[in-house]
Length: 187
Image (cartoon, helix red, strand yellow):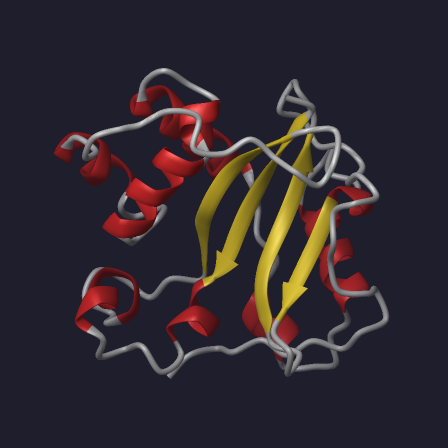
């Protein structure tokens, strides 16, 4: 492994149009909260664009692991998927993988997305806002993914082998700094 990516999904954009989808109930119905950023996953990286995945077969996640992480990643299916696809390449037990992900996710200070969404926002501005909110997180360690229509989908933080922020590798894609982005605030 050469490093990691902490992928933070903007839940309100993901849930737009999915509020009444039973399979998205936890994340999108509003029953257990109104989510902003949620943890999509903690992903291992290799030295190039091909990253390790599905390193071994796994069973269903224990209920306790799901219960302990559902507020960070409010989808049972996504928790299971992230463990199978990425976690198996990083840890022998799901508890270890999710503990690392929870620690990293909990350490992030998020910018005021409601305020930022009410003005002109660029990708570079959002990257800088994350850097300003988090000591030790340089702007070049943050990538932003948007939809084809310019809506914020995800913020990805590049981490080294030591799980500390590092400059994103050149193969890591993101929207260009000058691109304007829109932030869906929800219903």
